[in-house]
Length: 264
Image 1 (cartoon, rainbow, N blue to C red):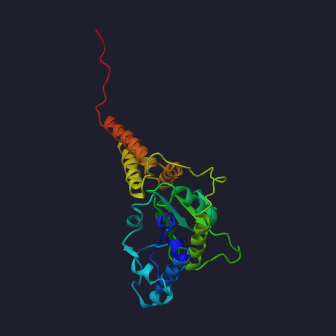
Image 2: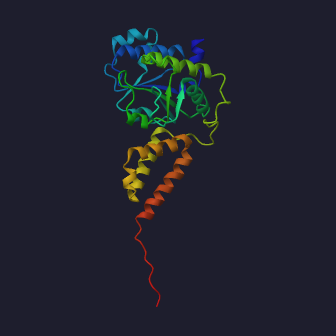
Image 3: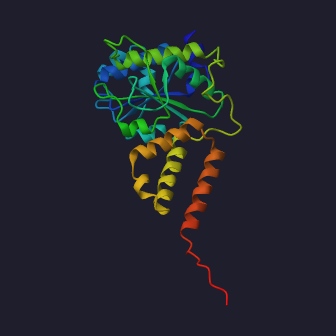
């Protein structure tokens, strides 16, 4: 049955991304949790100690997950081919960011991966400090696991296990009744994280070119712009259109101003 799970096309589109994991045993435990639920793509961003005998020991029979793990130097590199990025975090009341629980996250992933070319990442932060604000900016959604308010901290492997379980349970019965905030289908492939970041950089540059500097330099303003466009789940054609508009605006802003010449 496990091989059947691991051959499920939607599960193979899910990346588990760990950022700067301190304890190699946690990496091994995550690999085991992934294999239990049929996930196979593990990406490690600047792990403190990997490869490691401790990671291999904790992985048990999931050594193949560790052997195939991809190690990268930055979160942006890890996400460059992903269309939807979900950051695992405690529920944050101070951040007005799209927030989902683990089950809603699984439903979103199953809806997104109906597009054959779509890749999804679930990002887990450091054991002691989680995700930084800059890393959250690269996420389209934040996701949390409902738990006991008086003791809500989960080990990273336990958190991965919960998300992976919910994804597995959602594979054969794709939820549609709760999909008001989830797009059901796409004529064109969704834009990748790399394409979105290129668009945001272009947007920032255009705001500078038109002398919108006092607001464009404000991190909160750009965060709101990210939320706006991330909510839309832009496809590659829409990115092309928006960047075309930005380019035209930049070109227009550089034209010399023409003043009316009075007629005799």
